[in-house]
Image 1 (spheres, rainbow, N blue to C red):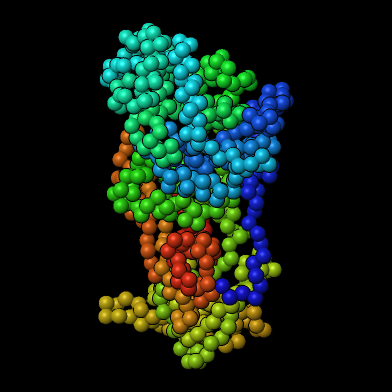
Image 2 (image 1 turned 180 degrees about the vertical axis):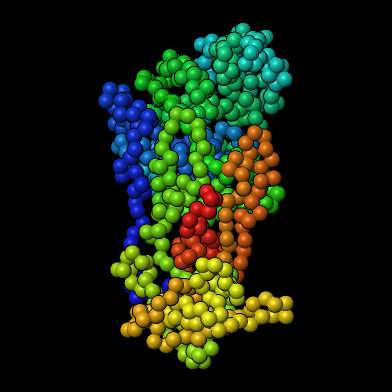
Length: 588
């Protein structure tokens, strides 16, 4: 934009939203553990002191992160930061058929964009489950040797049938009492690639009558002849997530392993694995402790990777980073700021029970963040020509307005007023309704930051559609000049010079669904897609917007907050996305 003072404000630092963090039960657990010295005086494998709080953010690299992951990121990294600890960035890459380097790269980028890092004074703490495949295998051999696991040779159908259900106990596998030496031999042959996928599986030996289905001899290793994105073809057996995850935590000396409530019933197996491994001398007490919190359920959104991919595959949206998507890359492209996401996560807090968070809470956090930051600009989204008949033909008069109305130190922006202008079509009515104070024949309004004009009539096409409005201006009424206050008008409208305005593509985005719970109760989420979730228009913007840079955000006065699209904007040709309207219209 054209200004006489540069915007010198700086974005809030990472975590600025939590300068005075609200208390929650996770924070209380850490405080109690620290008071008791539970994880004090620990050292890593090199003998270096460990902080009393070590957390981890452990996504599987099989898709793009969404807004729910943002909450987990803020919890895992935020709590470690607040208690002087560290958070490990770890990928649970134990399923090679679904994982790709593309997902690793975008997840790392998303975490950094949110303002978090995995480095401390001991180095970079970026890890992969595949870093520990040898250790996982070694522990599996120990579990078999110690009588805690066995190789099962049942078919998948028989295994599922014998597992039972919530009202019926499971049945022991006919291979459950297989001699340890035989199971160990089979495991080694599995590792050597002698068997086909599904021919054998390694299971923990716990209790087939347990009321917790996760404790009915859960699988810990399966055969999968698949190329891994990091280990290549070295392995043809891969550990199950529930087996690998606690071991990863223990190997990395994690103290507090936070996860969402769907893993609550998995915690007994988490503890079982760690206790058995500790008995084998692989780890020392205190062992990592898993604690569950409520996941983020956001209205008017879906977070199922399968359903999000369906939206992409069926061309309902334009990709993972479509601004209508709840993915972090999508909301980033939409124009959300990392500060607004952290503020939102702080506001929703941490709960023990699942609940729904209204989309307006997320949008409100964004408005609160952008209101202070975003420079103002004028845009006409539904253009109608306004002709000032008595304005000199070649006169170009300069007007100015604040870059930000609450920060005069940011200076002013400058733009011309000319004989022909663009105004919003809704700012003219040939026959005004009651309470309408904008342009209609015989009425006076102020052109915002410009002159007072009086409407004299309009031009229509052959179909009777208004195509231009005519008016006269009062030369002594210019805003900021002596005598301008002599004109008392009720209407104040936005405008841009028709000859100087930037013609730009503007995408008006809105919520993707019309139903607050689009996929609840087995509903067809595609049946409640919002037909107005994206509208592409040609708008006219004040000329300084030509210099807008990708990702630069503005408040288009009267219309909302907009961002120069980070993908499609070109030098001198920005494309704008509506981030959010100025007010919430969905609650009405």
